[in-house]
Length: 361
Ligand SMILES: Cc1ncc(COP(=O)(O)O)c(C=O)c1O
Image (tube, rainbow, N blue to C red; front, side, top):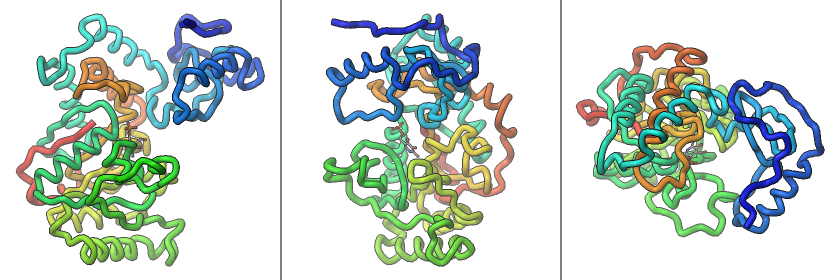
């Protein structure tokens, strides 16, 4: 059995010390990558695609090195994951330190301090200065699933309202919540029920033009919820404050606060899916911050952990991702994001005012 691939001039390690340059020394893919692609054909399920046909051997800052010695500028960043740069020193140090101490206990069997530190940090950096609680999971889809469970349990209602162009993940419920059929849903039904889709406030494509978009969209959305679902049946409205996979759709100013006000009026939980937009991806800590919106629940993943944990990790929270998460907020705080400011809006759901909020990651 082959266990290691052909690697030309493999560097000792990655990290920000790698030359931050584009350097092409072979055709793309080069011979070593082609050999690995053949192995891939024989061993990896055909359903998994890739964008760039090269194999990475090291990465650091904003470049990836392939096995043929090409240095490529990393515009992919693992899809909005390596926001502090690949193999950032603080992350590598904390992960190394953690795995040397222990790799796993399961927080629900024996807890550990790193989990608390992450939750405390989340309480500090997420919108709103109210009392908050967090639960940590292994993937974004799992966070969305749990946010919906919490909203349903808290409200005693079933319906979940989502938007055109939305992307929320690939589990059964999150496939139902995701808008696009290909490539995410085709052939994978039946999907979870009680998911209702409404138009997104999309200024560029709004029939009446961008100027009409905010007011029209709020009218259409609230009208559809009233007529087709019934406000009293809605547990949660789930929205990406800026849509990612659906095409980087930025709603018009005032739309999110308007939606939050509607949710507040009807006791509906507003869940902001900030899995892609969170952790300074849009210039503030969270996309909700741009308009001072404080959702009842936030889902976050991706940039929070710089690539950890693996989505395949089977239990709820592991000690491995916890330390880098807390370590990660330090470089962000230093480099890219404004200080956490006091919220200008209140929480959406009045019934929840006395509840400890839950932030999921
Ligand atoms: C907005 C949003 N929600 C949910 C997810 C699902 O996250 P994961 O792939 O970690 O399950 C993604 C992933 O791209 C996302 O962008």
